[in-house]
Image 1 (spheres, rainbow, N blue to C red):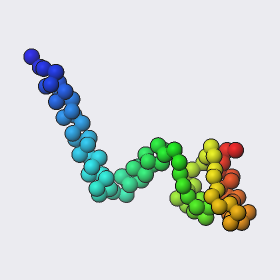
Image 2 (image 1 turned 90 degrees about the horizontal axis):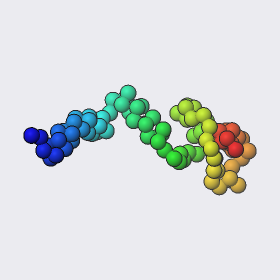
Image 3 (image 1 turned 135 degrees about the vertical axis):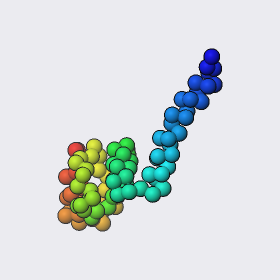
Length: 91
């Protein structure tokens, strides 16, 4: 008979390959892996920090809208610098 310990060990071995694949991808990711890992990270992020000038960049076009936009040191920003981040906010 298979014991509880044997079943648990068998179950954990199923995750061993998955874990090794993740470690391999994280240590030396291909361009596709890098893009997929970045997207997973971003999809699960609660807060994204970026400068007002970076928000207009190519890498930021994938973000549609944010629930809230906070502009730090807004008194130092010019109105054009604030425009694009402000347009990304829902409210």
